[in-house]
Amino acid sequence: MSEPGLNRIQVDVETRYIEEQSNPEQNYFVFAYTITIRNKGHQRAKLLTRHWIITDSNQKVQEVRGDGVVGEQPELNPGEQFVYTSGTMLETSVGTMRGSYQMLAEDGSRFDAPIEEFVLSTPRVLH
Image (cartoon, rainbow, N blue to C red; front, side, top):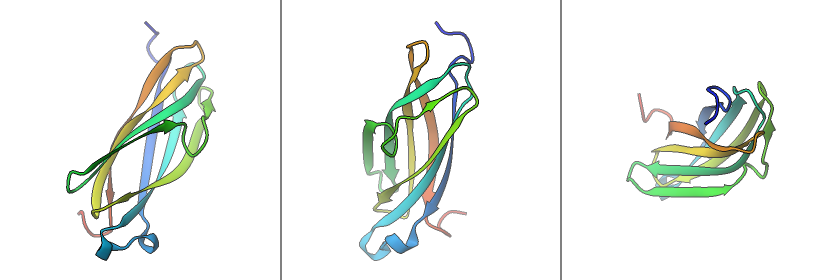
């Protein structure tokens, strides 16, 4: 059992619709998301893998698993952050993403850093 606060990763997300790469008439909506991962814990942690659950407004679900993020497996000391931008495509103008990063702590323990559900939406669809 680890001490409280030893492994704490904060994940913040900003999203945007990529109109120039989208084609609404063909049900093709492209979104970018910028993720900031902050190590708020007390020991170094390395991001090993990612797991995403992407759901469009038709309830079509895509699951994505893979090593690292954007080809990297960043190691973060306490207080450090890593920022990256990636993207996804939906068949609807609104959807959601949620997931987790699987982390390896400096002491050899593994833990999940949850990513709260966030909304992907074209402009003027949601109020």
